[in-house]
Length: 309
Image (cartoon, rainbow, N blue to C red; front, side, top):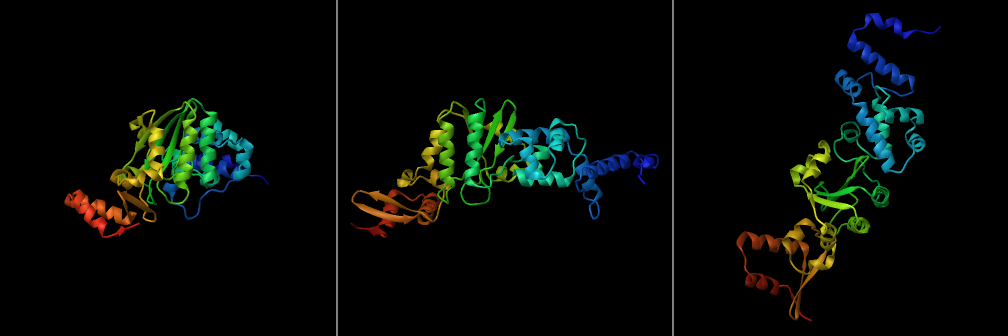
């Protein structure tokens, strides 16, 4: 015998009816929803998510990844029809299970999908990062590209990308396009820069400090990149900084930006060659900065490690 759920409506108040419809709608589409052990505030947070933001962001990310709705359905287990309704904004709510499935399988975050905060896409590999950048550069020729150099707590500097397009902005975090000489991140970053260089796309750049970097995941990146500087030589400048041969001179600014204690550089002076590790170079630079060591003191230090040919 069927049950007409609307028979219960007269005994529910406004908030209860809203939650009732939220859970009933989610269950009707075969999606599990949090109930037991879930705080009411968390349930309300899920229920009041802005569906227009989710729909728009899902559409932008899907197109940026080069996927059609049926492919998103295959990845997430959510029906193509339901995905279409989300993108069109005809859904009044979605479950936390659905949001998690979209985030896990499309490599995004709940913060970005539901609130436009932080990075839109986190590439699972170096090849995925290059593929993503290539697609944005080649398909969306009217894009403006901003490189965001930030500190992510790992080694060196991460370089994320924000693509501002007529249809909406999309971003990619920079863990796979890292600066410095650790792993293959710099090679991928160099490939990405060269790829962008071949186009006529307008390019901007912004460098974030530690505090700004830490707040990125809770920040709308479009507000961050408003401070970006635009220059035709930005790509060349970044490529130059990635060139190992530029380390033949002790440039404190470059070294601090792209540190790597595992790489040994050679400093040549006349007929002698002094080989120092980057750790030693860093100590030297700190010593020179603190005590204003002159070049004679530097040469005396280097003489102790003299290697004659």
